[in-house]
Length: 288
Image 1 (cartoon, rainbow, N blue to C red):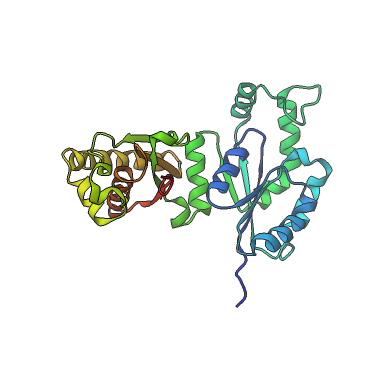
Image 2 (cartoon, rainbow, N blue to C red):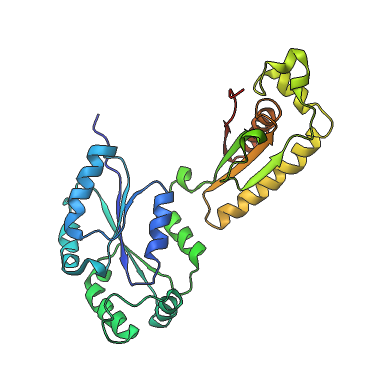
């Protein structure tokens, strides 16, 4: 059966209008992103991605006036059937006043400014991009949009139910091996009795029913779960509103074998029951 070709999104527009933000969001949505691509290489990039990742891999490229003379070839390279994919041209713009303020805040000159004013560079850029703006499938005016609102617009246009939902990874770990440096939240399960000191439970792990039942039945375990999971759920909703797509929660105990594993599995179960896309990972299980 022939594999369906994935989408091709070409992002262009005014300097300071949010191309980098749009590219980052597309990357989070699963797109293979190439920044500052000379348009003449567009078909080569699509061919290489098709060969290495499969034709279903979504691709996004960012093209701007830094491409110089290559820029004029973009329209020809986006002609129907030129890449073998359905292409969507996204044009980002904003008012001169806002673009000037953003460029001055970034302390960067405009690529077409030369020895003139920043406004001169913007005027030249608008002239160069005028035809492309007319060809655009989607024009987004970012004048009154903040970063989070722009990512929402991109997600609405190009995301799917899978890519726009928050993905929560709950990681069990042992403090003796170090705290995960990429965790958004860290919780310590060493307030619970350690099954290691129960001879019949010592060789088991938090994935075993007997060990899990023991851990979750200890004083304070249920209270912790009943209080902590709603906090995580509330934060997850906030992350999603702010455009974040990933959340990392670390649950620790001494060795990462019993208590943290059992509580991680239970936290994930409760989050999944509430409709979140949550998975469990046990970093240190098996190290002892």
